[in-house]
Image 1 (cartoon, rainbow, N blue to C red):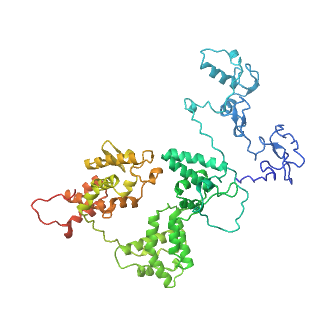
Image 2 (cartoon, rainbow, N blue to C red):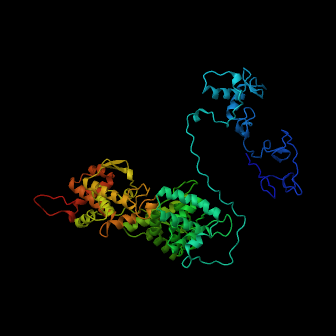
Image 3 (cartoon, rainbow, N blue to C red):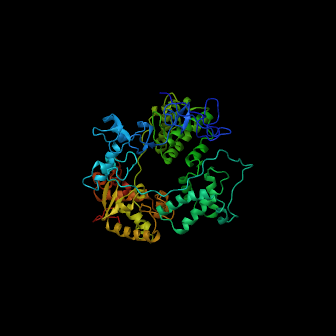
Length: 577
């Protein structure tokens, strides 16, 4: 079915179609008018004239507003059911007699007793308060009209939601924008913030104020932070030169010079619809710098791979977007081979053969495996988009890199972190040293995951050790004193995430553990110690830490390494704190 053609609108009001062909004005905006529109040729109505002699209710291209039901007078009927509500549509399919109702005397579709649906509904409402009521008592005090389609069974007993507070509507988009004579860099180093905040348009300031209050109540902002965010929003809104214009991330970035929370201001403006973010993602900017040395054709093919990896693809073959770390790893591994082929005179990845791939790959080890993964990812995307004829990387076997050997850590560094005066550092080290949690699991731990002496992690219920429970209670006391009003649901927060709903990052965790510890090394030490204590039982590691068999064998095979065999002693001692 072909789509209906888009009709031209009146050149003055832009709301109604022209009065007739080859005319630019409607009857209301007619020069020297307004002119009275002719009656509708179908229904005879003199209101809501649309075009070609028909009103909005009768013209097929018009979208008339809701109106009263023609049978029961309930407001809210549309043209989809012939200007009947849903109840009357079913009523008219069951009964076909149209006459004056014997009770209310108005013309409608009547049932077998000669009573209209409006009187039936009126009697139904009256019986809820009185046991018996006659038809004469139904209309004694008048008829109570109602809204259409509110007598459905799924609405009975439902709670009526509380009305949301009204917000001031934003200004309509501008049809023009004054171009700048020359570009200048904004600065707030020599200006007062209070004077700049007063330049904001009052209507837009009131519109953004609603979102500022919502975020302040949602994340538990202090009075000072709320004032600073409101001041930053008003300053940036004052930069707008025309009604309906939008802001950019560069406009918000100048708030750093005035020591105002620009990230909170950015979130408020995005929710208010006043910010248009044109910033290029960091991974895209980094990738563009890396491929500048490649030939244009080869660089274009890499950009296609980059777009699919970063944004995903909705067309067949579909593909989900990958993380920025995966994109960086694959491109960084494949770049040496791409640069070598470009130096050899290759201008496109279509010219690469399996022999070229074998020549570019390192002889062995992890570098060979990583470069092979990067090239396979690149060619897999290009071949799926039919930009290359063959996949030469799939024809070369790179093998697997030699697995790394987990090594134990010095016990002194672990004890120092466990006995640290910082409650966050002590709890972080305890969770990893006793229960072997990963950095990802620690990031997404929530307050509700720790209860009744247990910790719920990825579907596993872990009984907390006594040292971990003590440090958890100490940290929770510190958290409630340091950020009493925060609503962040995550267990670990810092001074930035406490005023938002985001989790902490990997860098924050590793910085808190100290210079001699990392999350991966501390977890490897815990798993290795468990393997030594249980006689290298891989099933025990899988049940206790949720590892796969292959990952568990990496730790159970490590104690047989000559460098890890302890000297002979009369009684073996457990080395874990």
